[in-house]
Image (tube, rainbow, N blue to C red):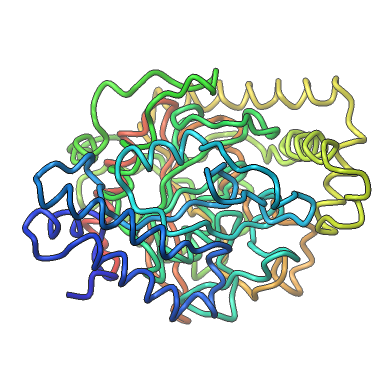
Length: 458
């Protein structure tokens, strides 16, 4: 059985019948890492021995009929932004000392361990997860498994590339402006940014209200299962939400036919590549044919990029100000520009941007009294040449210029998911984004499941 093509749900079913063991699944994942990570650069750390030991413990639990979770024994990775006991968390930076004690698990890491997932290693990120592609001077360029000449996206590009290439069934990423949904779209996987606070974070992110963690997988069912694992409260995050009242693995099968969906192909101001637009439109039509009521309409806001830039750059500056003296010469040159920009803003500027963020959230709250979900392209383009922050020759100045569908919904803190919608003529994946009201993670997953059913992704 080629278990690297199986979903996590299928793996667990095979464990239950004895058709496959967690050790076999982990060995196969490690084999694919050995075969493919040299070309994709998805991992910055692989702990093969530790993974096999975890898998052996899981195998015993399954043999004795005592698995400790719905995903016990499933090979998974974690973005190198989460503290992980025993492994350094360098966040793609040369300015972080790898020799310090690493004796704390983040809430995300702790929940994965408690539920028996097999941690294969840590995935690559741009320095401090600052941009929409994944490269840094510490670990190099992360590439798209569908076309190695193109970017995997970012900042959770390592996680997306790992999942897409079969180097582990699941991963956990972070998303402060699209960093889960961008690489999910480029790499053809499912990536969910849940409601802010749904997954606890520690330490607190300097990007504050923009910051989310979320599951990344090859199917919507697996995404829901992983969210069940990650959505438990943790006292170290004062913004964490209460535990869910029901499971996402059950809610994903909710019948959403008859609900009202707004389809906004441009948000009213975005230029979208014609091929991408056609692929997304076709997927939306398939949802309509399946029984979702589709109305083409825009939510009614203008591009909030100026406010986002203030929130993003001041967060980066706050974080980088804690770095050792001399870090200015070591950090990514693009990140240094963000650092310098952030220092130019006052407290009044920040509060003004935060007020605009709140107003945008109110506008979207009212919008969702009339429309259950909002559907857009995840991105206006498909993956472009690796090693560049913006598409070469585009004339764009920075990564937010080509991610206009993602960062507004970090500002509003709504759940948003990217699901594969199709491929370009060149074979590159295109994602469709589904956005729901705050706290409607279950609804967003259910609509995503419907799309997966009517437009199966191989």
